[in-house]
Length: 248
Image 1 (tube, rainbow, N blue to C red):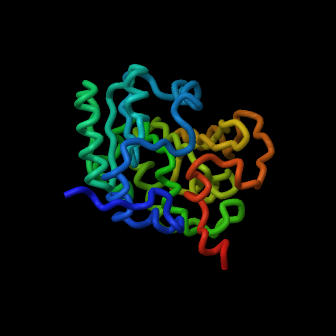
Image 2 (cartoon, rainbow, N blue to C red; image 1 turned 135 degrees about the vertical axis):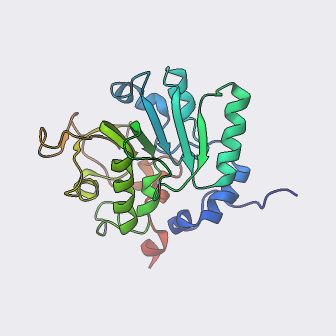
Image 3 (tube, rainbow, N blue to C red; image 1 turned 180 degrees about the vertical axis):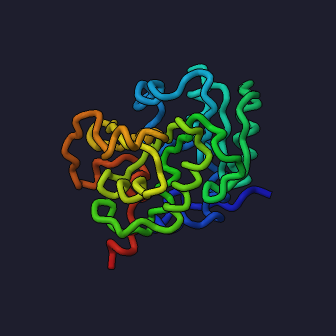
């Protein structure tokens, strides 16, 4: 039986909170990259991930991020996704390409099945943004959700004492600062931007360095951000916007 066909572009961003939506989408979609592909931020990422680093990718979906990292010599990779369909298809794809060393597991990023301090790097691209699709206007968001806070704690927990969290996102610093600055966290925060007309954000959080860097900072000159929605590419704008609220 063929999988049920769905519109990849949903009528509302709230669909992204539905696990069934992702299962149906992954059943029919082979590949999609949120927030640009690896080539746009490769140089920044490779400054922080070494060949022997143990790396956890959150919400791998059908992205090629893990393959790109593997080709750059980063082979101790573990990928997780909440969708069993995404996990199965990723396992088959990597096996067919000969990437036998990459582990792909079905797991929830809100309750990671790993011991404390077991990864050098945790990386995600667009995965955490799912937690905030109902947070209102992305330029003037509601307060941080409980799930977002829980996810940050899990990431901090599984990182080694000097581990690094890399987050590639639509979320602007004035929003993510709330999310990253819980008193229990020991990491410092810095960010870069990338993209052409519209710029996305790449956050680098270094565990154990909060005392050395008391406030977050920007490593590159941040260009002014236009609010013209048609500058965003593909599905990215919908991913961060509740169209129901816009139409009301």
